Image 1 (cartoon, one colour):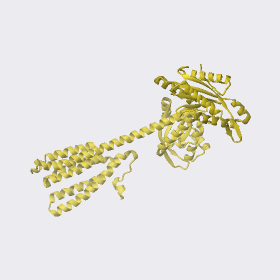
Image 2 (image 1 turned 30 degrees about the vertical axis):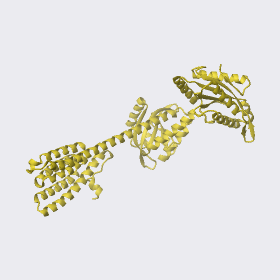
Image 3 (image 1 turned 180 degrees about the vertical axis):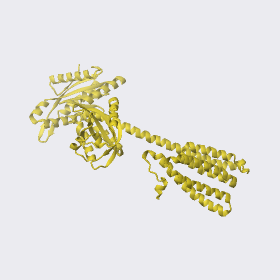
Image 4 (image 1 turned 90 degrees about the vertical axis):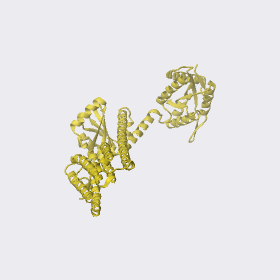
Length: 497
């Protein structure tokens, strides 16, 4: 018999029997140590002529040995054995002081330790209380007079042991609670993010490439038949199947531990709450298995009802969370920035304009909106081609940004139209100074390979709240002022009036 088999009393424990397994290990460990120590004490006391106490030690060692044997009959037997042993040891310790006096009470500390470790703080506190009670009546039991300080010397270590063990148990409970909260928080966060990812699946044409190359396993399953309609690269690599092989299989071929009734239950949850969660086992093509955390969401795929399944290896939940965040950031950037100039697009600009109105209204300040349009840009495109035109737009974007502060916003509205938001200015003259700088900067030659190109701009300016306190009107008035600037000869700026 090896040590591991002995400590486990020969039983195999499931993962959910962790607490029982720990009790069995502690019980066998404590009883083994007790047998060795008490056998040694028996020999020493017997040789010293203290026969009564020697036989008591031998009896306790024998009881401990019987308890080890009894614990091997059933896992549930320890629920009876542990309290019974603790009670027997308590009475034997109490009996001990009749023979050896107050020094025998130190065994109460061993009893309290065993009670706390084997049955928790409630049982530990109970045996602490009755141990102290026994000490307080020690004098009447042993017929020996003890001083007040002798009582203090023995009760203080017992009280301290009880307090320290109680605090240790409290610490374990707090740590367990924190770990549980952290796990639930992590699951909720991944669930929330995968739901957002599922919603983006129906809105973004560019998402398909990101989904295909994601390390998270992503499947789309036909709602009625549970046949696979799609699996991404991450799923195929993990399982070892080709996409064609997957499409010939259904949900249960991969999720071997899931019953059809369970899937029906999840479908009902998806109808009510839009998504469902489950933990299951995946079986690869080579028959090996691994655990996954699944998040399911009902969708419409190719004009038919389906549900998307995000499967994350249970060991890789944190990595999956990081990947989903990275994908979200990439999609957010694509949605809010112009891919050519890297400037904010019209959607992000409108949001910043709305925020600027809220701040200006709250702080009773002003801001300016500049509508910038390049003069004769169409001729450059027609003459030199779109590649050169794109290079000119990129250079224009860089120059516009150099003329304003980092806190100001330069955005590309469309084509060769740009919007600039200037906040917290001191006077109309300071806006005119910036507009003049923009005109001068853009009219400088642009050198592209062997070409020297020149572009100019016309700028229309509106001021909040003088011209309007509405975002759409401010843009429309700035656009109108820009056309007035073009009519007056281009390459200049005009304030709306």
